[in-house]
Image (tube, rainbow, N blue to C red; front, side, top):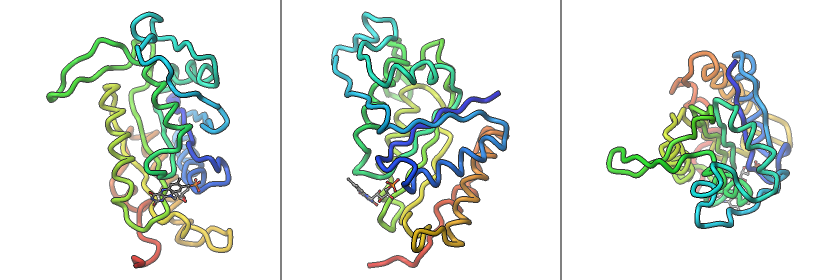
Length: 223
Ligand SMILES: Cc1cc2nc3c(=O)[nH]c(=O)nc-3n(C[C@H](O)[C@H](O)[C@H](O)COP(=O)(O)O)c2cc1C
């Protein structure tokens, strides 16, 4: 069975729009037969990587010496096949999620390779992650606003030598709701997010048309 591990970086946790999209996507993954575990970065209280000398690579055989919430998810991360990073755009990332992403380096090996002129690591043999997917929501209207997040997720996948499966990008996310209720357009977005989850679980890939539906404009561009 495919195992997915999702990290929700929104400090609003279940109350945020990130969770709306992630929950729909996770529902689709489960419908497609995958197992999904979700963690909230703000609950894990993961500290910043403190040893700039890469002790996890050079001395500790892939173990991180900081004893905090990251130790709870390292074993789950090693078992997962798909890593889902879900985040609001925060110019660019909420700090708790950034800390977790930095600490993923312990899952990689120091045997660096050169690919397309770039120096890359890869996941350690005992780590099963083969795909990384991104879910991102933002406040402003335009999609380009999330280019930095997309770049970060792609770079992480390249650095770990795993596939980047694609991104569910939801600009002007607040327009999914009106007076706290999901609008019919918002329901369409969440249905597309669920469909993307089904596709990733069953086909191993997400259709571009489905991802475009997740990102569809909900209001005309405002000034
Ligand atoms: C510190 C901070 C920085 C933000 N920066 C941006 C930004 O650069 N672009 C943008 O579109 N929205 C930005 N936003 C808005 C959030 O991305 C938006 O409100 C998002 O829906 C929050 O997700 P959540 O509901 O899961 O908390 C920012 C919000 C905060 C608090």
